[in-house]
Length: 306
Image (tube, rainbow, N blue to C red; front, side, top):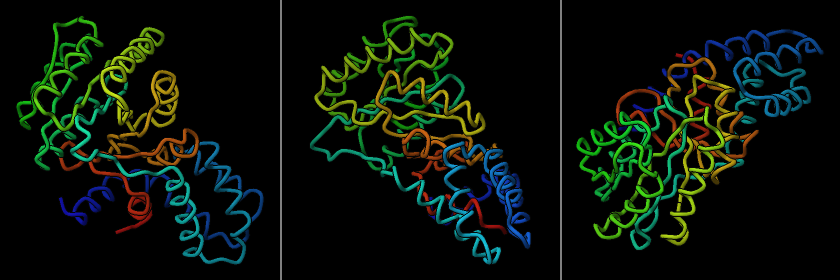
């Protein structure tokens, strides 16, 4: 997909967020005087967009020092620069290994319903377009639907799938998947995992075991651990992230369904409160609707009208 095409889709996807808080900001910045009430209103607007407490405090403190005597456009430009700065502090590009370091192992975490398996399928399609050999591992053994969905994606994009019977030990599936990847010369291994957050303790132990198996079978792996979050859940997504961080070293976030929420500000909260970079964003159902996250592009799409 051309960058301009994705930018337009990202911009369209952020319409609800833009209407929800950017337009309110414009009204606030047009006020002739700036006082404690104005500061409180700015804080309320940012919090309502799920920017998060820490980022909101940071932005309001900075705005309070800058705002007096400035035009509306200057204030908008200032706020955009501050948000980009927050997003870039922990930003890192999605890393794919040199072919000499194969297989490159990526673990996907996330509660049921966030679009985790679909994200894996889209990622597999992306790498297959780059002519990389991809192997999918169905380690969410408690949901037959997840295994079936992964198989459908495998057939669709031309990627092999390693699976066991329903209810099998997820770590055993991962073990077999890694050995199969080495035998078959796979470049990338994408591992789907369970997301039963209501069984928190069991889930965390299961994920820790998976991580131990991976690190034992391949030095330096997993190379990436991506947490898939549904943007429409806002602050609930942050709480999910904190739980998953207990079990694995999360290296990046995939934020899905950004086109269906007025709380796109959660991107800022993720970076500021968790220190985990958003690496990919999804704004639709098509394969190309999942793209690497770029802070400057995101903020431009968020604030730009028309």
